Length: 495
Image (cartoon, rainbow, N blue to C red; front, side):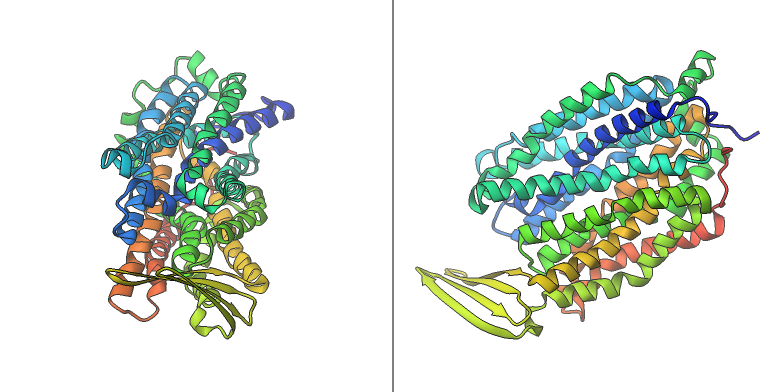
């Protein structure tokens, strides 16, 4: 007999709204804490790593960022087990405190020039703690909401949890841009970048207060009162062939592809326009933030549609669109930033000591700030591009399309995973494939993509700027094929 999650009459609409709000606020704050590191990776690379090789420093910062993702599956095992034994509520209360404390401490660590290699090592340690905490948070929140939701509407209600990842990135970008505008570029890059890390402690305190008022999931509470809680969730989840098969299918048929689409559309897109397109930091952050804000409703839309059309068709549809259109989309993004193809209108030049500064204007309204510094190693040239109005909104559109793919693959995923596993081992079983797919396959996307572009550039390959897309395209394509063949359109758990 397939298991029924909960009868529709268990939860009142008011209680359900409170559950979704409390779970979503806490999860949003955890994503905010996790993402500000990635959003500030270019600045962090200059603070915690040697400055003599900027590319190596950036890759080191991205590697530390990726380390937080890689450790997430271990957090899924540790906290998933606790969640299936002790309960959902108390487990993701612990994860929230671990995440918030680690983020706050990153904002206090002295830079490389003060503490040397101890600084990046401490940052790495705190990122690993963040990854462990996030590994336990998502599964708890998604399971908690799903076990309150009425049958037939879990896609819609759990999709609100899915919005928190994108909203967390949006809030992190908004706080970063606002702080940078208030302090100015020089002070922000010197010390102001610490403020987004430090203010998170206030947000965490608020969320803890809200979560303390929550009750345990009624489905899990009933299971516990009947003495049916699993004594060894790890053994039941991964030691039994049938359940292990479903874990592997969830990973290779859904979450791995969903992970790379997610991190390509949100993180690599930002890294691409900043590092390959040289778009101004503030403007690039605004572009991504606007695209995120405009597309966020897609999570709820596709979660709702998945209740009617099924999870499989929407998740795999998002992967297929990403595989087919990523290269054309990024070709257009590159074309918007390619100054070699622009027509120059005017140039203003100023010289001070050994530094030559030029402001070059183009017919499309874009402008380049070009700086040439003469030193003992030769001439170092840097430039920052500010897009004109048409280019700005075209870039928003191109990234919005990618985020729309994210909402397709990510909106229904919580309901999809919850429905694959029984209550007694659900927290553990769903958390591991989710965090391997997103933490490892997805989390490695920015680092591997930047490294592939760097390698292709050194080798002078044609269209080297597109080399970073091979990783997400191949992973999403393989996942689509496996999911198309082996995933069922119907859940194992009764609606």
